[in-house]
Image: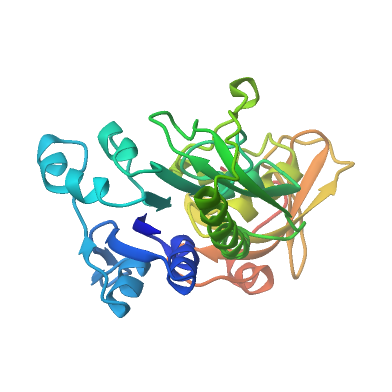
Length: 312
């Protein structure tokens, strides 16, 4: 098929590679502009751009696509292809772009729709304590991930799994499903399935403040957020005014009856904090502000943390 590919982060790379390996003709790649990365703010191209450059595919990085100038520049290009393929592009597509290709635009969405519509479905699947997730290949419309479903693939979420490993696995599942979808689409073998809007849930874009621990939550909920909010926005609290990110922990039942956020116990290699619902969080690894992650033992050597200290 003749395609346009629209994607930006590492999640989108397996889909682009799979399309190329399957012999599809990629007329153009749309991706986000290069941006500064890291402490030195080095201008860095998106992962999808790197792959497109390696294969000499024309690359477009418009800062805006929902205006008349973008339509004038790109509408004929989109009308010239069979489909637009979208995988974590990072922009809302205008109606003219969605309808221009022969088969419209097809999205690789990393959740089992209608669950977790929105920008951060992988993070929130873990943070919400889900035990299963997957990928939905969807026919895009102008709603927020509301289009008809074409194919789905499922995978369990490991009890200790974090966002980076789940993202990598879902990216590969999505790439395989995408190729299957296009093959069946060409053969007329797909019957789009409308989503049940009554079952919809949402996965809003993550903000830095989402990472701050609410100690009244159950310890297991806090641990799930730690897993889901890796690497951003993290799972953090404040100790005597200093930010401290929790990078590993264990949820436990508690016999203590103290205010949530109170340090219950300090041991050589961990410390325990009271949480909601008669639960407690045993913290075994931390990331102090301006430093690297370290075992709680190393941080405790200099922190002088005491039982009874309030966090937050």
